[in-house]
Image (cartoon, rainbow, N blue to C red; front, side, top):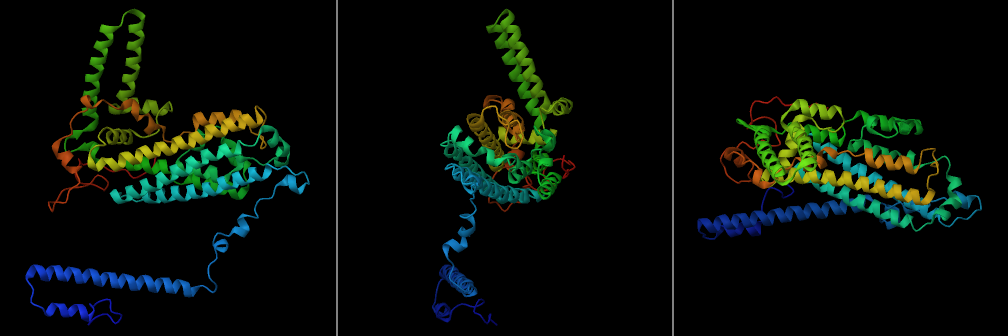
Length: 436
């Protein structure tokens, strides 16, 4: 019996076509055509019904200004100088720019939270990584707008800002809850901040929100866990670190011979010293003790396995299964760079506006902001991978069995595709889903 609403049966007019004499291929083609038409009819009915239902649910027609709540947004600018009958023309621009920033911060937090939700899943496939990549690209484009907005604010001169600056005390951008949440959710740890006491400058309810964000895994934590559990760095007897070590030693020997041949005296000695220093950085890839030493010194943040996986993705990004992950790593660096560009431009603007004056919130103003540019980077481990990359001519070939696992294919053969899933394919490595 068909569905009473017609979803389980074809229209009678189309069913009558079956009564004609057709070849098997024609019958198959006709059946496929009828199925597609039926699906279009059903989808059309569902779409029209849902639209009608939505429209009926409204008492009044939706109006543009009502939907965007423009009455609230456009009446949220209240210049303090105007209230004091001291009409400073530029205060409205100052408020508008900062309110716009806060709206964009809200969107950025929304996007970052959605990416964190994706990475919370232990089984990440190409679809999930593609979605995360798409949203992180959106984050990057929004950040570019944040940087560009500073140019608008810079149309206000330092003297024009000073005309209303006194009205702002003791409020400060230092108290922006959303910016603190954004940094924290991306992965900026409290101990890495220039001023760790910032949390005590917030209202109690805002302080609790930041503390909650600090207690949760950040995007950095999720990415580190994902990298750490990549199975292909150790695959059926293949060891990425061992093959990488052989390639580096070969390259190092050639570089050493070239320097000895081309340079002399103090110049050669200095060059050889630099080469030895670089070699120690390379050693951290295959020597866990060297890696941990760099981590203790603050030069590294990613764990040993995660660093290996990150490097392997970047070295072999032309392998089909590594293309999306490598792009994801690059966009994380872009997001970090864009945030730092905004900090840098903000620092320049503040210096132009107030010079070496103390900030309205009591901070060190320009000096404090300049320090954040240097210390508040989050994904520097990934951006620093360029130091460890090798020229293609030194890059070891991957085993055929591993390359086969990294191909996109449409075969019915039972390939063991486990790059982003638990177990299988690799050696019996115990997976670790905890956070560092």
